[in-house]
Length: 93
Image (cartoon, rainbow, N blue to C red; front, side, top):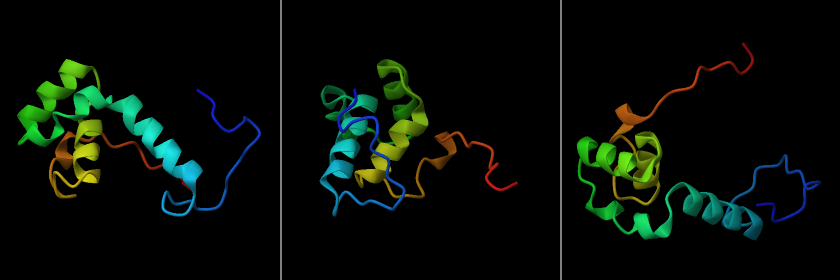
């Protein structure tokens, strides 16, 4: 869904705290990846097995669930990282 026109391009660093469009984009992507009806269950996920089962049930990668748990401060930023898939670092190489 296009919300702010296809010609709008941002190069500068934007923050949800300072740019309402960025906050809206964050909310939109958050709710597309893990819809609110499923997000209500996030606080119940206690370990990697819980995350895998939840991710399988709603059809997304476990790493996305871990990222959301970390972002929402349910888990520390060092917890669950083994469930994230790394992309090759090809920038400037």
